[in-house]
Image 1 (cartoon, rainbow, N blue to C red):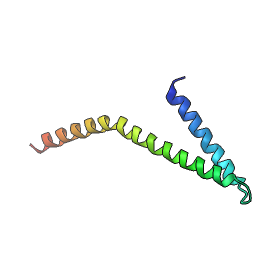
Image 2 (spheres, one colour):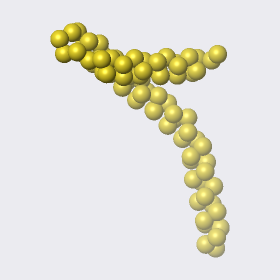
Image 3 (cartoon, one colour):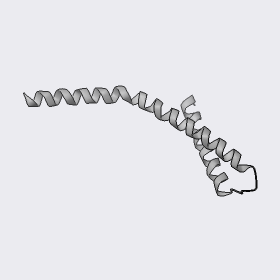
Image 4 (cartoon, one colour):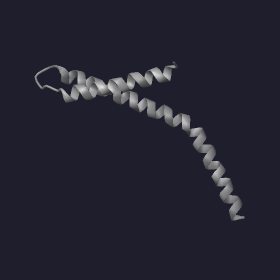
Length: 77
């Protein structure tokens, strides 16, 4: 297994744990600290993953954009 797959499994598991903690939330316990901490961690991981995904797709999108621009300019002539 590669590292990306392991990170993906851990990330989804942490989201599942967060949902379970929210469903079983009790105001009198210290679960709120764990829920907030887990929520902050998962938010940071989600933002980092989105930025990495954008950076991976950027060359593909730029290539597609430039190909479309050259096709449009050749049609105009």
